[in-house]
Length: 223
Ligand SMILES: C[S@@+](CC[C@H](N)C(=O)[O-])C[C@H]1O[C@@H](n2cnc3c(N)ncnc32)[C@H](O)[C@@H]1O
Image (cartoon, helix red, strand yellow):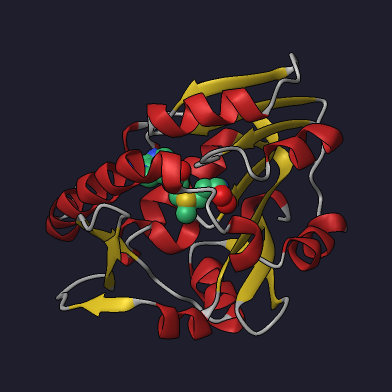
């Protein structure tokens, strides 16, 4: 582990504590904040099929859509409080839930698709290489990573905090409690470039002024 990676552990712990505390508030205003039809359309043509792993599923906002397209679906999150809400939302018996902390994880199975929504921007820059290495291990040959996330314009809605590493933002809960989260807001071309450096062939596009969608394949599969 590099010195930088060691440093970001503190922010990862705080970020997870924030989401655990926020679980019961998470869905408030989700439909209002997220242009769901636009985002659904953006991933309609992306390769979500076969055995699918969803990382950071939260309360399961995207899990039913994945279940419609998957042969099998494993939905995972590090926060037990989020997983409990996702279990209540998604009653399909074919969906398995698993507690996975992405940064304490060694994939034991391989999937055709790994999907995550609004997760990548929470991965500190110094953990990107480690994270995408894990994704490679979690994918079958020819498999795809599919993702949705916030784009750079979302910075207007954040309260940035001083940081000497990955960008950090302040998040507040209903009771006034203040938390801290990592928020790395990539542009579409910038993210495709970062992934190319890590040997992934990525197609990333802005789907509206605030959100991006992408699909990545490990380049080792194309050689
Ligand atoms: C912005 S939410 C996204 C939830 C869901 N994908 C969605 O689009 O509504 C980020 C999620 O990441 C989860 N999370 C935080 N740290 C994590 C970690 N280290 N490993 C896996 N999930 C984590 C949180 O519990 C939360 O559910």
